[in-house]
Length: 185
Image (cartoon, rainbow, N blue to C red; front, side, top):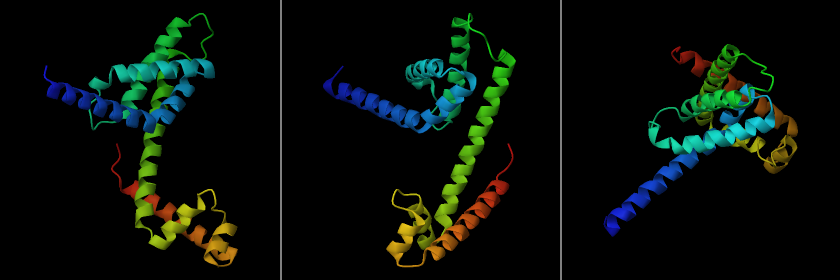
């Protein structure tokens, strides 16, 4: 192997590692929440979460780029939960395998719904007038209390509350419209 091909291989490994870290970081919260619905004991859930992370990395070459990483990861997590249950079969089982499967399916559906709602919110935020988008995003910053925003903009606090209410209502309606326009699965 030449020095050039070694560098290419190293670059590919870095790209793969970077992509994995990005995907795992983006979805780890959801994966853990999914696990917690299936593994009631937090220490056990932490252990399974670590095992899932290792397995995801080991199997990352099998992940098809451009598909749903979260769904793929949750499928692996589900099998890790089953493995964990087999290892700890001396402990009382709170859910039957069928109930566990149904819970896993429900969690996946809810995660998908939440993701669609978040995407709709992002799209609706982009449609807002710049002034409104700045106000609503400023509101959710550490220094974004209505009183502080009113002081910064030199307007009455009541006007900030009214503007925020109007913007939230507009976002709510936009999200409802966006989700209603999506084809049903």
